Length: 422
Image (tube, rainbow, N blue to C red; front, top):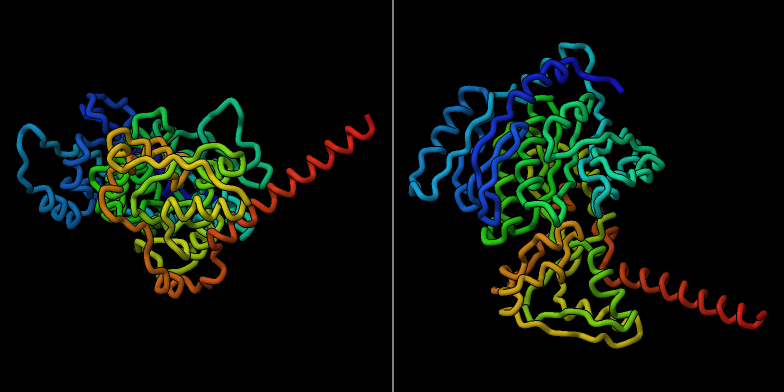
């Protein structure tokens, strides 16, 4: 794969960005990052006011950052983000890449979080469309061989270890960030510290397109840690100088299988809520398709867009749909919103992705009549996409149940045939 001299020339600067500082994680316990950390913040509420452009080197950006940093906070809660060593601006890195005579191919993509619910679909779609796909995956006992079998290149790396990132970005034109932290990790480790490291590294390496997945309405719910972090990351990217596309998501249909479809079919209890919250779930294959469409569209550059399914559903409506398609009633346990708010059980009930179900304190959102949906007419028009190609939840679950019921029928027939020969 062709590499850029401009990228390799900035490798040393990437490591120089590291600087330790005292900070607090989401739970409020003190924590000191490793010396390899690219940056950090102290307190989710405080980060809403921080100057997020402090790493950009040009004087105009620096002056603007100083203007944004002149805010008043109490000494008990104030925390100014310590600026890292300056990195080259994206435009300068691109100019150097062109001058080197070895430009990075526009088909080269790095997918971060490639083994996740969404990431694997992005990888598959990109490969099908002819892109050269590199996947950044954490070292694990069971390698992600299926990605290699599809035709992707696997590189080991970890967002929580910034020193592993520069080598993965050499020769890359576009970064698609699908990653999110593991349930057992402090929420900030990957979703903030790791993302800041990735963004700063992308700046230093002259990455020419950066795609980030966020959550719809994240700016309206600072009380939900992951949503607040997503909002802060959006602002950090927008102020970074990168050529970005931010895609906000409402919910994934895949998350409904384990929560509702399977328990209903197996006659097990499913959890419901009396909350009026509605979510416009979307198939991850459609998200991947529209993401790749956005990459080819200049109108999507430096834009934030929301991808939503054709219809927003309440929990009870989803359960009723599963009952109808499964041909049997569900054992529903309805939990009042007040209880959910106290216990935060809803992190097990609503999965906009299975990777963050244990981390999203979504019960806080249900205190009001929230709709996780957005009009898609303008988005489809901008992307030149046909809304009729977007899978409906009815069709998605219908196909799932048809496949499962057929398998169960075949297994039952096979079992009876075996009994006959015995």
